[in-house]
Length: 187
Image (cartoon, rainbow, N blue to C red; front, side, top):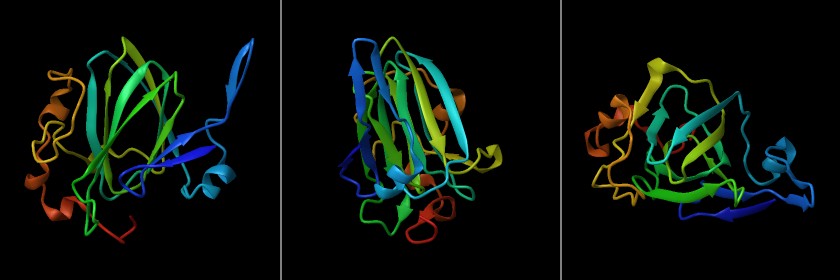
């Protein structure tokens, strides 16, 4: 497995070894020891699969009391995947990383606790799979406005398909500090 650093130290791109021949290909999507050796030390408790059409934007989501590290990948199609650092005290607080994940490049993105996460579908459809280090808790869900001008995320779509909830999330500057993370407190 190849580990590629990003502009934010704790967010990593992972390229699994792919074994291809005339029949197709095989790859390991997760192997606990190999991922621990790569510095990804968390127990994943929940797997999620989403299907979305072109132009769909999901996010930017996070949980405070039950923060989730995520290991994300695309099974079919392509997405632009984004992680935003919400750790007060981090040198990259409020900064974002964007990565193209696709069934073609077979890359994964590891997003640690303390980040908001979202993605936009750039192919006709996409199957998006992600592992989470804690269970989803609807009472703990927080969100960040996808189009926050202070973040300046360069999304590949101007008018995405959004849920009403995602469209109503606040800007980062409007989120109280107690609804964000603190560097070093579990993150």
